[in-house]
Amino acid sequence: MEIAIIAHDGKKAEMVQFLNEHKKILLQKEISLISTGTTGKKVKKAGFEVIRMLSGPMGGDAQIAARVAEGKCHMVLFFRDPLEKHPHEPDVLMLMRLCDVHDVPLATNLATAELLIKAI
Image (cartoon, rainbow, N blue to C red; front, side):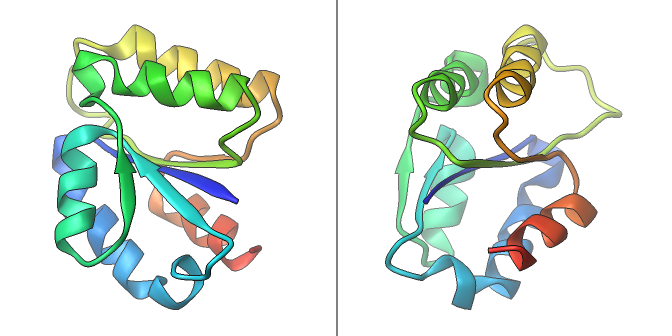
């Protein structure tokens, strides 16, 4: 199972804390993590093995969206910061739309991510 990990700048620390709290589940052999660039750097520093894409504004969200469309990514955990403007918002919306089109579970906040992780 491939899980995409994405977090806007104001949510990166929250994402790392979430991953650490669910380390036992996420370190299973059948789970692989992919991430946008900057989030992936922080996730890797926290001790997780992760495949890093480009940073979100440079196309990382689009790369993950492509993996969703190809059937390679099975879940997306995207801690969005709804109070900030993001220049790559069209890519974010595309990713969310493709998750809906391809029926891929998508969490955009901590509460939903908790439910998805507990369902694994």
